[in-house]
Length: 257
Ligand SMILES: [Zn+2]
Image (cartoon, rainbow, N blue to C red):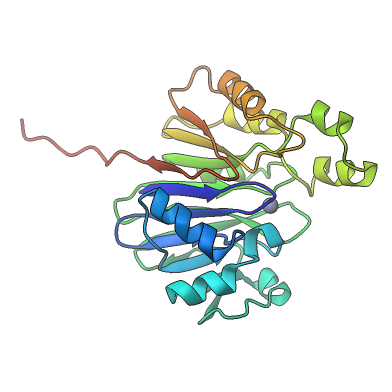
């Protein structure tokens, strides 16, 4: 399974999950031209299907246009469907926020997350049995998330803000409260607490949706590295503008010798 984060942050989100047979785009929050250019730059390929995680513009804004270009169906949860126009999408398919479903060769398991729009984490398992999960835009870690991430080789997890920077920063009081609330975004501290409980199967952790105003990649990485001190996982921070790719190693083959 190869995961490519094309964009991550409040200016737009997009990530590809590709097992070699099916390529799935999770969120289409950057314009088609930028998306195509980043796909080419990262050596990835265009998606066979698009999933929109929730009805916030930085995740769905270009979904219809992108889906039309790649002639790909768009999958959305029942609650998001009511909020999204998805103009241009050749077809729209609806999934239940707790119901696993299949997209080509990929098994997709959603898990509802607490946010100010109905949001889901997605765990994607490829035909090689390798799984990767994405969880962004959550105000707190729901109890079921730890089990949802178990067995994944790649985990993409939000590390949105540094609490001190948020409260000292330029946001209005109302916005600060919203970001820090249980319906907002995860702080570096909240993410670190989850990372401490990660199981050993995780090979790579990618920190996602870093705030350009209230966080620094160096701070988020430092906190996460402390939390993963006894873990062998590789740690990366996704960027708003530069794609990054993670390929999980193939499962161990039985040797005859
Ligand atoms: Zn977002």
